[in-house]
Image 1 (cartoon, rainbow, N blue to C red):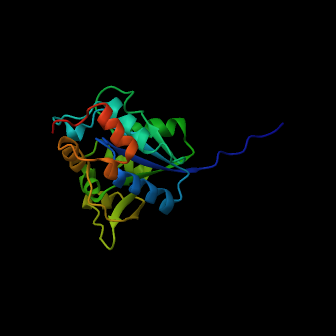
Image 2: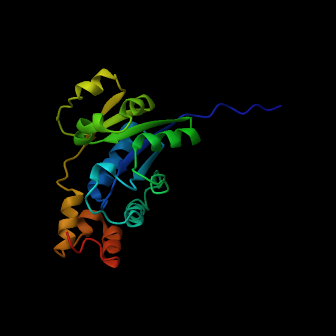
Image 3: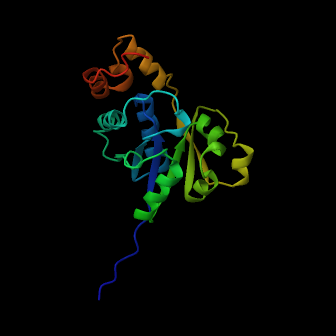
Length: 205
């Protein structure tokens, strides 16, 4: 009788955020992670109810997911992950990672963070357990140094530097540009710019 081989471990990037909206700096970071970490797949995990942004008005989750899908439509190694949109209540990365690993236990997940997110990591729900389940890739520009918060350092996480070219771009800047009626294509790409225009997003900010 034939014996099924053990599943091959995949290296999978976990790129979460509100993506309100996603822009070309997000895409540059995702591409950098694919190359530097030799990932088989990078998943864009759109937060349904980002608990850290409670009180700030966000574009509807379906719009944010659709914009991510538009941004990555020509990227075969990237996937939109809507697991947090299908759950009720606040979107916690730990719960999303646990759900993914239950379905794909052979995957090795790389949590992709910016420096600001790294510093705030000890405020995340269940962050110690999260660090036991994932490795961490911290995006840095040039020769920037990385200072792990003392509480994070005590957990002895697996982590690496993720090189990133400087792009002076943020979702806040994109929303402001949209409100001002500026051409968004150079900063979000033609597909996302068209989506924002069609759905009249960010007319007020």
